[in-house]
Amino acid sequence: MKDILDVRELTKTYTLGKVAVTALGGVSFRAKAGEFLAIAGPSGSGKTTLLNLIGGLDVPSSGEIEIDGERLDRLAEARRADLRARKIGFVFQTFNLIPVLTAYENVEYPLLLGKVPKGERRSRVEAALAQVGIADRSRHRPAELSGGQQQRVAIARALVSGPALVLADEPTANLDSRTALEVIDLMRRLNSERGVTFVFSTHDARIMNVAGRVLRMEDGRVQNVLGANA
Ligand SMILES: Nc1ncnc2c1ncn2[C@@H]1O[C@H](COP(=O)(O)OP(=O)(O)OP(=O)(O)O)[C@@H](O)[C@H]1O
Ligand SMILES: [Mg+2]
Image (cartoon, rainbow, N blue to C red):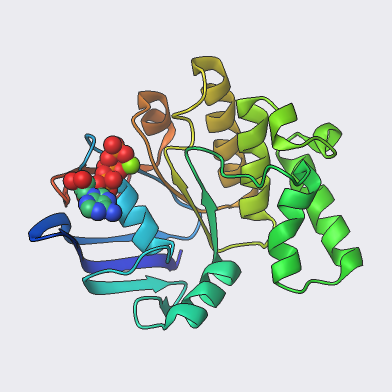
């Protein structure tokens, strides 16, 4: 399978006043199409920083990021946003749905931004909501949904544009244990049945157990990689 993601010697240093904090100290790895790759590591080890850089939400201090053959780190803001919209879905720990929009409208939103025609929008939104098992809640607003249902809607929103890669930063951290397991099962099913490539951070040992590979971070570096063809 081809590489969907190639990260080379990525660094990120934040400057707070006169103090420089090195969040990433040179991270390199690749992910192949169809992978289910977990990023683990203690609090402060750089997981969120790494996912935000890969997702184009923040810019690296140095290093290279290639997504599906395109160099993300070289792009100016507007082109980076465009690449992000075409190739990446992002799932957040806190769901980050738009509160005034219904589940349907939240999932439709990226397609509106992408100027997808109305008829096609409808069929794609309905298909995405059905894939995550939440079609019967499409008219509910986020406040009228449980945490697990909100995260399902967020996953549908991440999938609806047909991205090459879905990034998820601790997607189950704000869910109770049983609901977290359901969301893990859903991600795993989307991966194995539909070939969705996931790169996600987690503290949850149950996700790590179903991951194809686990990248373990410490102090802004990859300490080791466990799993198939690591
Ligand atoms: N915007 C920022 N400004 C300054 N320092 C930051 C910023 N974001 C992160 N850091 C620092 O970078 C390091 C890595 O943080 P990061 O949030 O990536 O860790 P994490 O592995 O996601 O932790 P957690 O498991 O708690 O979510 C930490 O030392 C953190 O304090
Ligand atoms: Mg984090």
